[in-house]
Length: 151
Image (cartoon, rainbow, N blue to C red; front, side, top):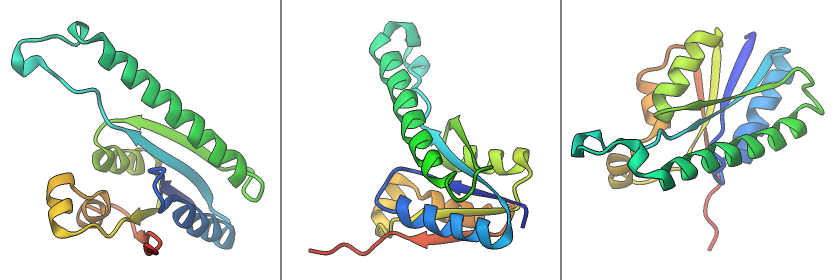
């Protein structure tokens, strides 16, 4: 194992996913890359509109990218205390396909990501990156469950 990509979604699963990926990178002396995908800006071309007719969406998208970069950089700084060569990458697009594309182009040979344990209906409506990456995996993949809810 030379390069590990860890998919970060800033959910409650993130700390466990990042710890597992960091531990693996240390154990295997592998390069670690933190990866996050920002959903693409919606397209209204099917309705005859152009993106310029919705400037608020541009502002929202720019803010989403800025916040993601800030959060990812903060996580990277913490990881670099034990893995100084760790890097990060932000992509724009469908999280599943952006992750698969990045794994292929980066030459990564292992992926770590979290699973939220949503039910069948939520997975059907929202999709599941974890389920998708397992089905379409191009390299070995480790799914780390999110912590159980305590009520």
